[in-house]
Image (cartoon, rainbow, N blue to C red; front, side):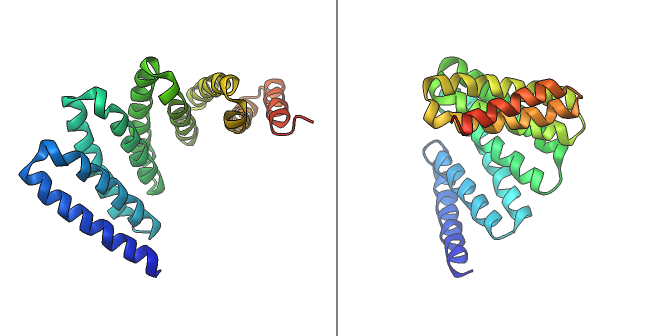
Length: 205
């Protein structure tokens, strides 16, 4: 436990310093404070301190939201990333409806970002859609979960066409998720086709 505790202490000190700097000059130092809060959340989570991790992420999201309102081109991607982290923290605490709301907002942001910069953000969009599918499924919203998974497969398919070695494993994983959802919807033939495609991607021989 020594190293994680030491890492947490260092991160807490970084947050304290950046908070003081941000109070004196918000425009210059709030982005650094938001990053430090995100790091603090990760360290707290690794130590099982989930409520405190959530609080740090919520503060980071609030800060990135203000920053993105002032300069969306610079900070929308940071806000989307923080919202994704917030969804994970909420999900770990069983707060699925709130996790879903955060993921839906992240998907909307990544969708907009991917329209203007496909190479930089399509993979983030696919990951967020995957998360969205899982959360919708957990809430029993099967048709919406299936639609999100199908969209994620489409994005991963496009990515795999441009860089198969990097993205085909992601596509295979998403196809298996899609197959499970299709099976649950009693669409057995489509589920089997998705599983076969995934298996071929993972073992072309």
